[in-house]
Image (cartoon, rainbow, N blue to C red; front, side):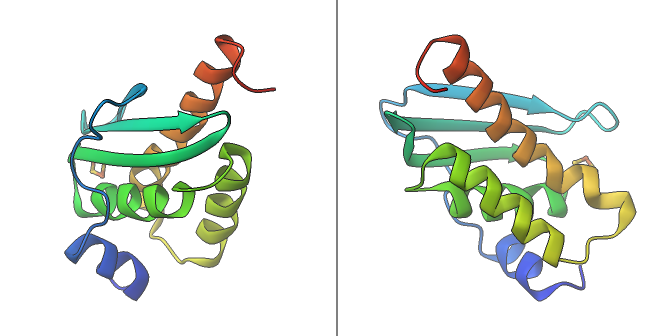
Length: 122
Ligand code: FES
């Protein structure tokens, strides 16, 4: 793993575990390798108060889950998604591992869809 930001997230991941009394649980699974990441989240209105993850995946999947969870924590979910997208645009990620990193962004977008489906956000 050449990128220092990702390497640091992989070696010292943030937000590992399960949020106590979580409101939402999102499980994303890679279509290509069957790796799985589970996020648990507490939300007030549209703000992600707390978020943790458990990953059964490669180093990039773990780094991505750490980076994404850190970037969205404490933020309005739309702002968090925007910040993650901007951040990922600035990081050089090998093509073969893009899907590993984007698995966690997919999870946050899925969370947003769940909130919309339950009338919690617009
Ligand atoms: Fe499975 Fe990276 S190889 S998520």
